[in-house]
Length: 130
Image (tube, rainbow, N blue to C red; front, side, top):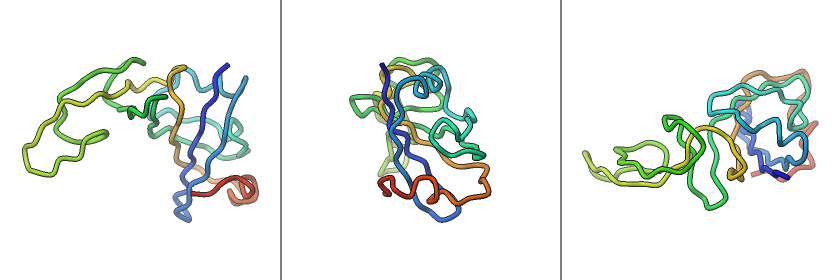
């Protein structure tokens, strides 16, 4: 059985909320990719719409939107997700995950793109805020 920790960013007030998703709800995330839109019902936010923005696997390697598939890859990167160069022109070989959500993913990052009539804190107020 798959368990995900979904970190939901509320762009209106700048807060982030963590929600644990497991069982049948978690299975609906499998196969989705970075940039996919999902209904807020999956994480307890009815009438909201979310967009997947990234995540990490069980060993902490970040997902990257330009890598197809589910598996990890070692890529030569100039910057972006997983590498923030300190000098101009610096390149580095980094291990990153593909953009598709699989059983190996432990955290999914999402942003709210369509707000519902009630505030997020009304639904997730008792959840741990970051």
